[in-house]
Structures are given as C-alpha cells and as structure tokens.
Length: 79
Image (cartoon, rainbow, N blue to C red; front, top):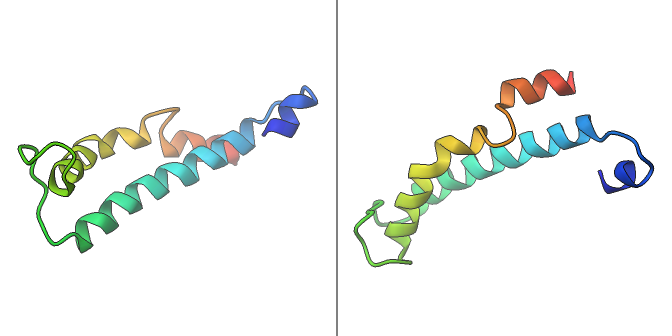
C-alpha cells in the first residue's frame, strides 16, 4: 500500500484485502482466547485481569467488522 501511495496510485484493493484479513484475525483471536481461557469473561473483575479484558473484547468484537466498511462491502471492492 505504501508503494502504491508513493507512486500516486490508489491502493483501494490492497487496503480492502488488509482490512478484511485484519477483521477476520481480530474475531478469530477473541474466539480462540475465549475457548482456551480457564475463566469466564467478567466485566466487573479486577481492571486489567484476563476475565475483564475478555469481557471488553467480547463486548467490542461486533464492531470490528464495521470499522472501515463491512466485510461484504470490502469483498465487493476486491472483486
């Protein structure tokens, strides 16, 4: 993307690919941590503790796909 910007080209497709991959990684990461963490999410746990951080991640994870466009729109740009 940086090379395209340096030459004055538009990195639309590359940016959409990176956004789509990043969004899927964020969602997978939260799901993976949730499945392996021995304690459940707890928004009232000690600040900075694993249960509190997991609760924060679960609360905010639906928004991951909305930043910069939904994955469906991004895939349309890529296509």
